[in-house]
Image (cartoon, rainbow, N blue to C red):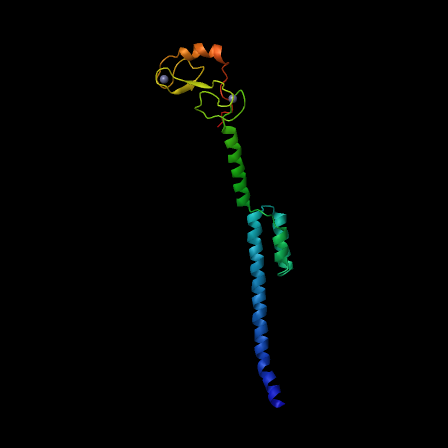
Length: 169
Ligand SMILES: [Zn+2]
Ligand SMILES: [Zn+2]
């Protein structure tokens, strides 16, 4: 009987020490979770009231606050949001930069001379150097030769309509 009492008396300080270590670990974990929540919410919103609320939840509800924070926090970080906006901007600009046929509105390339869909004349080749130039130009900007053929023929074939949709830059 005495042996058991002695054993308990010996093990009690050990148990107490273990409890202290565990407690300290829990407090550290809780402090770390608050710090993490603070950093996390700052990456997701600039709204101070939302930041205070998020940190407050994790601070006042040790451990239980973390899952709550994960559910309630804004799904995207500010960097992700910024990236998404940039991507959308590029997509929009790509669409705007796309040349379309002035007649049928279908996509064309900048060096097409005839629309492949409706056969509208879009541009023509220079008489001298052969480069693709605008139907309305009377002089070739590449070789400087004056243009007679295009100006004469376009009147009877098709109305001259320059491609639309050129980007605003
Ligand atoms: Zn067309
Ligand atoms: Zn030319």
